[in-house]
Amino acid sequence: MKNLENINIDGLYEEIIKLIENSKKSVLRKVNREMTCLYWNIGKSITESVLKSKKAEYGKGLIKEISKKLVNKYGQGYSQQNIFRMLKLYGNFRNFENFSTLSVKLSWSHFVELLQIQNNLKREFYITMCLNENWSVRTLRERISSALFERTEISKKPEETIMNELKLLNNGNKMTTDLFFRDPYILDFLELEDTYSEKDFESSIIRELEKFILEMGNDFAFLARQKRITIDGEDYYIDLLFYHRKLKRLVVVELKLDKFRPEYKGQVELYLKWLDKYEKAEGEESPIAIILCATKSDMISELMELDASGIHVAQYITKYVSKELLEEKALASIKNAKIQMEQRNKK
Image (cartoon, rainbow, N blue to C red; front, side, top):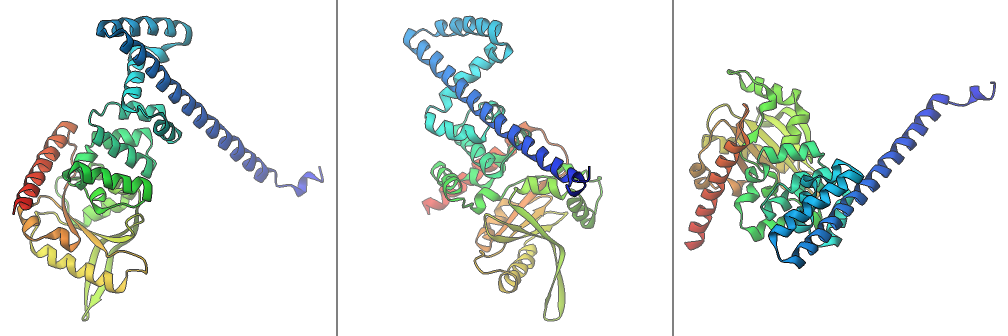
C-alpha cells in the first residue's frame, strides 16, 4: 500500500477513461463510415439492376422483395424507406471518391437530412457549412428548418458565384462576407417580452451568447459589450463587438428597435473607421458591421450603397416563424435581389 501512496490513482483513472472514450469514438466513426459506404454500394447495386431491366415497375417490386428479405435477416435498418434512401444516396453522390471523403466527417444521419434537399446547389451549401462549422445532426436539421441558405446573402448571387465561394471555403478555408451575412436573423431563443428596450435586447443576447453565436456562425468570437471609443473628447459606445476568425475581421453589431434609418449609416461608419485605425491588428481585414433592425427598406439600403461601406442591414425575428413562411419571405427577397442585379447589368 505504501507504493500506491506515491501514485495519483484519480489522475491515472481519468487518463484511462479518456483513452477508453477516445477509442470508442474512433470505433464509432469507423463503423459509421463503413455502414454509410455499404449503403452507397447497396444503392449502386439496386440502381444498376433496375436500369438493366428498363422497367419502372420492376424497380418497385424489386425493392419491396429485397427489403422484406433483408429485414427478416438484418432488421429494420433495411426497411423500404431506408432502401429508397440508399438509392437517393447513390443517385446524389455518384462519385465514390468524393463521397468516401465526406463519409469520414458526416454520419448516415447527416446524409438522411441532406437527402431531403432536392436542389443540388442548396445541398452543397449545407454540406460545406456542415463540414466547416462541424455541425451535429441536430444543428444541421435546425439550420435547414430555419431556411439558412435562403437567408444567407450568397443565395442572391448567380449559381457560378455560389459554387466558386463554396469551393473557396472548402479548399482554401476562406470565407466571404456573402456566406456570413444573413437576413433575417432568427433570435426567437432570446424569449423577449412584447415590450423591451435596447438594453434588454443586448442583455438577452449576452445571456444567450452561445445560441446567438450559433445563429451568426461558429467562427464568431465575442469581444466586448458597450465598447467605449473616444473621439475629440466625446465618448461613443459600440453595442456589441465580435471577431470572425475565418474572415479575419472585427464585426460590429448594432441593435435598433425601430426600422433602419439613414442616419444609422453615419454612426456605424464612424465606429468602423475608428476600429480600422486604432484596433485592427496586423494581417486583419477592415472591420465590418451588422445593423439589426426591426424592419428595413431594400431600396434605402441600395441607394445608400451600404455594401461598399462594409455595413450590412438585416431584420431580426424574435418570435417563432414557420419554415414555410421563412422560405416564402426569403425566396421573395432572393427574386427581388436578382431582378435588381439584372437591371444594374443592363445599364
